[in-house]
Length: 221
Image 1: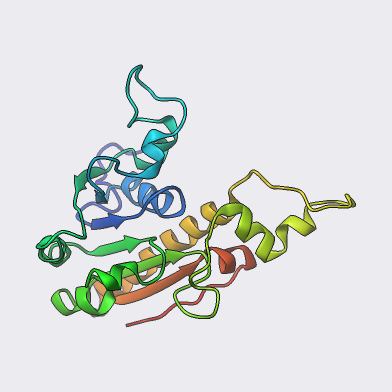
Image 2: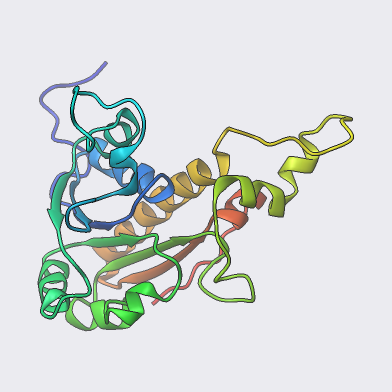
């Protein structure tokens, strides 16, 4: 039975959300559902790619798809063009006041903007910084495109699913995204728990591919 007198479990936790599409937004939606303040940083004008997806909630709009709303409900939103002069300082100022930063850009994007873990932890040593990507932040596959179908194929799930068919099946369940989001959610909460006990921040490297394999590669600051 839900006790209305209890404060939300993650009340007081502030999450800076640089994620888009599914894996990252699913993770931050779970955090928002538990009471965290999630500040979603989007590109100006277009915002998250999924805003323009099919089935808009209001006729005549192109920025409120049911897909977008499902994974971003309960969040605040701010538009920042990371390529503009001064954007780095704005983000670092937000990071000083945040407990968690989560991003799911292609590896190297945040570093090019001067916003990688080294830069952010320099202004906030207790930050929990989580990067979600297709194949992890290091290794020979790090720069490859990472969509659910590609990850399913690379992990062997598409082959396992064919059940005797001569050709592998295309799986429309976005399990790699969902599992990466859930793994990131659990890892972030574990790292936040450690921060509260020791004050030590963390860098988390969550791979969609390894999420399907049931293993994670976690870098700890």
